[in-house]
Image (cartoon, rainbow, N blue to C red; front, side):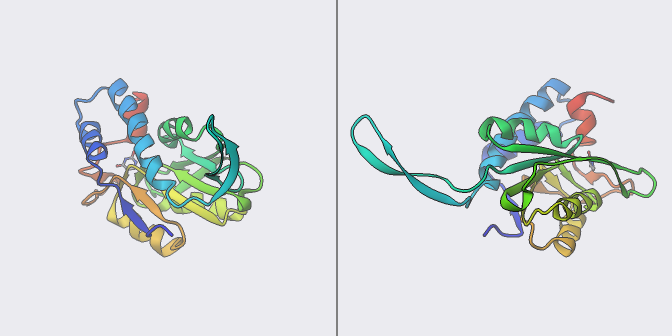
Length: 210
Ligand code: URA
């Protein structure tokens, strides 16, 4: 069982995150680093997957070899910034099923508003990994996980790049059964609900919309 919070301290993760935080890093650079870092985070979030064995034949002899057990896992992107994390993970787990939860944050209330929901069938039989680079207030993450549970998901993990202590606390209260994997927990949220020191708006930085 993963802990409720795992902070991935691997030097490569921390080095890449520092470059991503730097406001001088270009959109292209940010996107490339996000893809690279997502592979390293995916390695952590897929720890302790169920395994089984199957018989194969190497060029030398037959053997019982370990292989993943159960149905393909479901990777759920919390739009839009989740897509940046998801692309890299799909390179590592190309057979994953993919879903999308569309939420935007009302800038005044900071509450999540849903505009899209499309997820694989049989969510209850799969490990579900929800991805969103920024766990800020936790409002949209909690709402997304609520929706995934309503759709039948029972075994969920949450992967983000950066978290605020407020978001971690909110997730722990609302969904204590959902382990969080992140590269860092920053100092706090500012009055606009942004993580500080943070990296700014992850969607804008990866898509160049500002
Ligand atoms: N979403 C972002 O993209 N950045 C933050 O700091 C908080 C929420």
